[in-house]
Length: 423
Image (cartoon, rainbow, N blue to C red; front, side, top):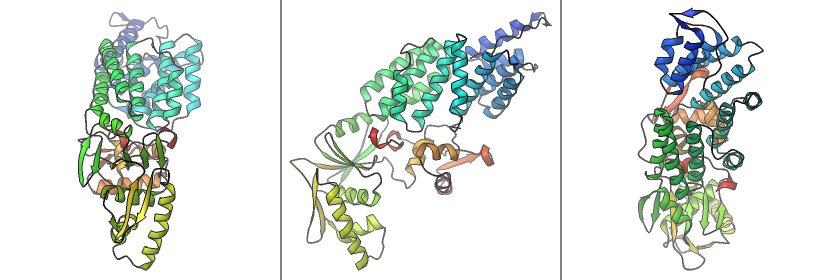
């Protein structure tokens, strides 16, 4: 993205007009060559050069410096240079997305997009729309993202935007567990990324493709367990089996779904009964799993009876929970198996790891926004994960960012937050 045309200077620099330097730098950035762009504008402080330097630094990964340069460029452009200012604001939003600073003001980006559209800059206006759309996808607003995508042109004006479009299509399909559609979108994204000759986009497409080829969950059935790919998960959820879905906190059977997202005790009981099926589970084991009680007493037994009654009521359309001499057992309606779909790696803070595993550096505020919880809760989880060497941080204060300590060996799609309507 080129944030602004040259400002009409007539001076010469080494025998080359200032306009030509700006144009050459912009072309270098468009080709993904930030070093060549910096050679042309590194020593200049006019508004257009500041903006180009900011974009170059962003491409090199120095986001803090890039944000500062773009802010200076925005202030330096005059009131008659509304398009250049709008391009800078879109570039700042792009950096915010890359650094997972997701709390940006939507009205500012909307105003910048409207300015670009009014002046015929369709490519950058479309880029602004995709930034907001990708933000919705990151924070789990899948329905809103899908609606916004449907309102966009399915054939964006540039190869880079076509790549982003297909990546968003693939991201929505992956979260919906529509793996065939996701693979088709990734193939289209790869072709568009190569047409754009953009190494960063090619790497992003490759990363999305790896999501479909890595273990996504564990299947626990009849005392054994194995890893599943996303295609396997999709097939399982479309089968007739009664699935205790510990990834999305629900119990499923065909088209029927019972959400237990707000009932963690009931989910723990259902999972324990599902893992033991067709056998029963002793009361002591159920108490230890659901209440984390090491020395159960009569009060725990009374609470277990209450929670089992609640679980029996919730699961009535799909199964019954009956008492045995030792404890309780789960019996599905009809002739079907009971299986448990578990996360690829059980962790108390797996939802935080699921977001961090995209390789980006997240702030605690962005994690809280994506997970729909308080920043303090997220901070406590990060402290625990850091103590276990699972995440690491850099920066201080509001500039602190968090990443995973190592690349996980499995995809984390099923750890991402999904609203109940999207289950």
